[in-house]
Length: 357
Ligand code: NAD
Image (cartoon, rainbow, N blue to C red; front, side):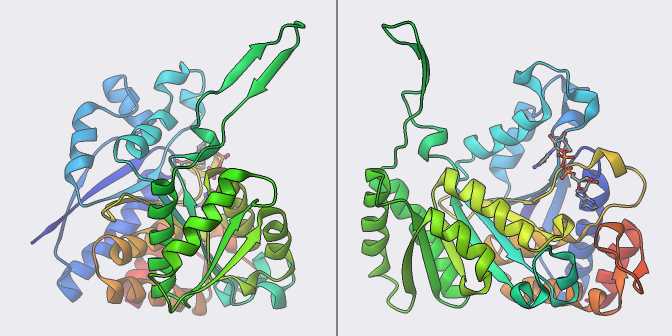
């Protein structure tokens, strides 16, 4: 049956980079019989300009009906002074929460051709290939009660609640183990079980789920050590799984190991592997509309969509190999450019990936 893909280009460079990813998917429809139907709609500032909301109910319904969503980015100077309730980012948050996208997958993958882009020594990062699985809809960012209260002595006190139920830990652990099974079968679960009871439970539940995946080698690591090990010896990691806050921090740290924001894809999945795919970067309003953006993070997000939601591992690999090929050819957008390479624009990069398929 034809799978439905909703394209939400968004703002800034969003329309430029998603157009290149669509080009790649269109090429696969012709060359490999990829059976998808793509429709496009508005999100973020673009949706606000058209409907007065960063995501209309109609678009939300379309998103719910689709098998997968490919999103560009949202936000920009033009909408910064809007009331917080209608800011572009609210469109994204609504999609994530109403679609119950609890699993955030962020690969930190460094193409060997770009090892010089990292601030770490090339020998430390060359060949880096980590997948961080972050729980996205629970933990301390959502736990109740929360707030700022006034104590009897008149002093103000801020408080949040770090909470995870067994079922929440179980479902994210399954996502991580399944991902590990598709990769090198090594999983590091990150917690702070020496101090926080909630992560003591996390550790226990991960060990229980591990029994269902005997092929996966499981390690537990305290978050402070994990932050250190990511800089010291990042290549020791395959898949890392952790809660919302630790994942927020560690995934940014890991992505920066690669030094190239324009290369990093991401996926947010629900219980049935239905998901939203987007580059890790923002809408880059400083370079929007100038054919300067790097479309590879979005193209690689489309590859993740084929792998995790649409069930076409072979086509995902085909896209990733094509990206590697254009890098071998020396083609670089401005953000990953280094001397001796050939500087190209967003469209030319997309064309080169299509040609390399
Ligand atoms: P940003 O990621 O948009 O840009 C940071 C820097 O990286 C800029 O110099 C930009 O030109 C560059 N850059 C980013 N993506 C690039 C690409 N594909 N190719 C080449 N260069 C690229 O972050 P920011 O400047 O902090 O935020 C800009 C806007 O994006 C804000 O409105 C912010 O709220 C929004 N934002 C959206 C998302 C999202 O949609 N998921 C995420 C982060 C920020």
